[in-house]
Length: 149
Image 1 (tube, rainbow, N blue to C red):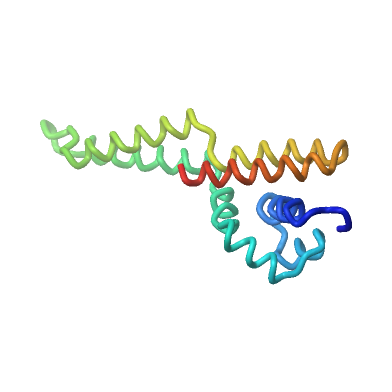
Image 2 (image 1 turned 90 degrees about the vertical axis):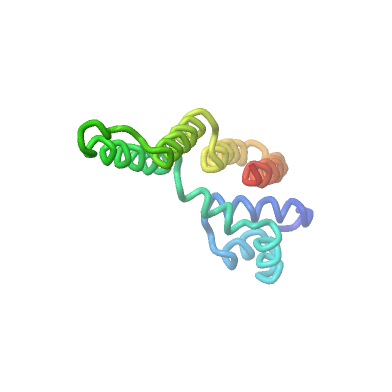
């Protein structure tokens, strides 16, 4: 793409690779760079990990946690009468599951952040393509920061 800086190409490539799930080759062709450069950007920016994080939605994560909580609770309820309470290990696990559930229910996940950024960028792109590329880079930095948690 003529007229774009290398930084702008990288930000655009990030959006196409991570949020639109295009291959490195497809992205390289689309943004006007080489596959070698794409490979370097993907590795340096940990883009594959970001992609994987997006695959597990909050609902799926919550569903898994609730299932684990329910299974442990059922196991405790099936104990013989007078022993239907959590031992220290079970209590610790229940506490950790409860904390993880609360966290997921109240905090934005990386997948949520990416989804919002994708919607905003898709809306902005026809209005101001250069601005959408600039904001894409900002979202990229924020997502990386969020992954470090």
